[in-house]
Image 1: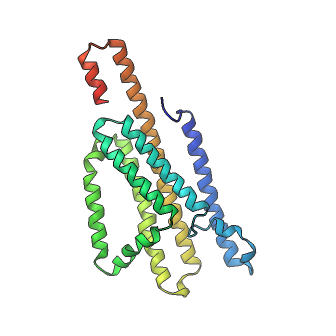
Image 2: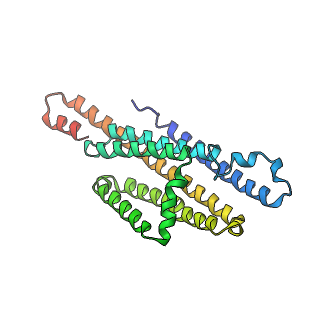
Image 3: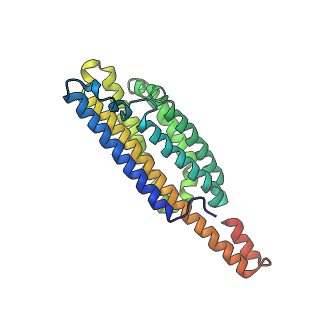
Length: 242
C-alpha cells in the first residue's frame, strides 16, 4: 500500500509550487519595501520572508522540501530494485543531515571555505570531493531509468548553481564592504534561495514520480506471481529482482 495515493501527489506538488511562488514574491516585495520606503521598520513581515533570515518561512519551507525528498528516498529504498537499496538509504540519511543544516542555518558557515577557496587551493579540494561523490554514485545513476536520471542530474545542477555559484557571489559581495551590500547583493541572495528551492522542488517531483512507477511495477509483478502460482521459479526470481 503506498503511503500517498497517486491521485494525491499532483495536489501535493501543486500546493508546494504555489507556496514556493508565494515565498519568492513575498521576498521580492520585501526588497522593494526595504529599499524604497523611508521607514521599512514598520513592516515587520519583511523578516518573516527574508531568504537570508533564520528559522523563518523560507527556511522552514526549504527544510520541509528536503525532508520530503529524504522520505521519498527512504520509500524508494524499499520499492526500487534491490541493487539500488543501499544508495537510496544513504542518500536519505544525507538529506536528513542537509535538512538539519538548513534549519539551523549552518549552511553559510559550511559554504565559507568554498568562498575562500576562490582565492586558494580550497576550491580544488571541494571540487575533488564533489567529483569523488559523483563517481561513487555513477553506477547507481546508470541503473536508473533515463528520465529519472536526467531529472535528478538537472535538479542537482540547479540546486548547486544556487548554493555554490550564487552563494559564492553573495559572499564575495559581502566581503567587499558595505558599499557592495545594497540592492544587487539582496537580489543575488534572493535568486540564490529561489534556485535552491527550484532545484529541490524538481528533485522531489522526480522522486515522487519514480516512487509511483516503482510501486506500480512491483504490484504488477506480485499480481503476476499470484496468478502463476508459488511453484513457478521464474516468477519467484522476477519478484526478487523487482
